[in-house]
Image (tube, rainbow, N blue to C red; front, side, top):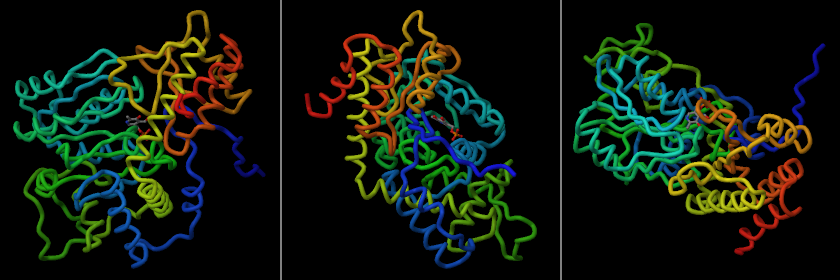
Length: 402
Ligand SMILES: Cc1ncc(COP(=O)(O)O)c(C=O)c1O
């Protein structure tokens, strides 16, 4: 007989997943309810309300897609993009490439704009390209964990409105960790995942969409033959090419009508509910400040270790930090030693940055002083550079206002 899983204690300081808040783990273990039980429908409504707070939106359609963060990206893109639609994807890291790939699979005529990894796009470039290429949809990542850069988005929504394009944003790595006022920035569809700044496990993707997006999606509404009533109205647009990620169907399922679709992932909904409660209870501003001070302290400690931060200083995400692996150091060996000696995980890197940087997250439940200090102490013990204790002292000074 195999033993039950008994994971080693780990401090997950990579770019996600991070350690889930124990409150969220407790919520997951609550007993199941049927998906049409009035009590469960109440929890669904509460989830919508909590995430309206998190997304800073009044959008009626604020719901969960069952699956990891990329399930949210797929649901948004397959439901927005009609075959042959022009889609513009600004790419500044791995997750921009992922968006472009998913948009192509959805049948879009995708054109990309590429920025060097470690930088982002100036507003003027995005505005110029939207005007020139006239896309139906612009799809962009907010914080790309592969480079740790955050694309400024405050103006892009307005540009897309003027040019009659819909704007989709992947906020997987930033929601709850940095400001993203969905309504004020006029973002049409935004999706995320629980396993980063929201302090939950992977497996549920909060998503919000406004009326502009709803109008486009509803014209493709289709009802499963076995559920259809004689008076059911369907849209005239082309059918959405995925059943599981058909946002028109998912909206019907989350509506008062509660039209059957998938079986809601009950335990993950409990998790998302608790993640939302934790964040709303703390307050967005203080959560953003907690993430910012944790990275500031971590970065001060990394600098004291003689490590150089990667990427454009002005656009670094406040919740994941990237540092150059020093010449002559085997990055994977250090990561393994940190895991084996201290039980701490930090992140490797992809594509053009493979083997060149480490990525260290200070996200969600782990954006805490003790987690930052333990990580620096562990790294210092392995790298053994500079004055002993200097990294922890530098991070401590940030927390003490030094
Ligand atoms: C910015 C961003 N988008 C999307 C994803 C994909 O998320 P998932 O692995 O949960 O599908 C990630 C995961 O790291 C991410 O960082």
